[in-house]
Image: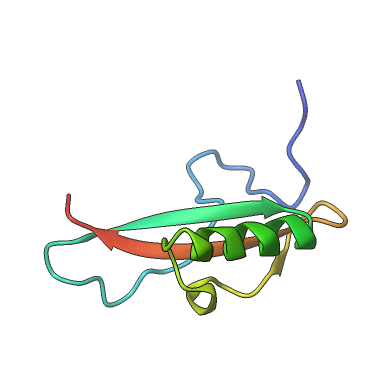
Length: 82
């Protein structure tokens, strides 16, 4: 079995993405979309989703580094009705 990178939390109950979600609209629940891959792949997917009318390019997070060399991630939070 593959071991997680040393930077991951040791406690399995710890969130991998400890990002606070503030100002959740009343009656909605946050839903996070996470893209992980090469900078080119993540950027291309963000633009493809925009082309499909799903999400504006500017509402995704900036490209964030991951523990893996050459890999980035970007996060989009949408608010849905439960």
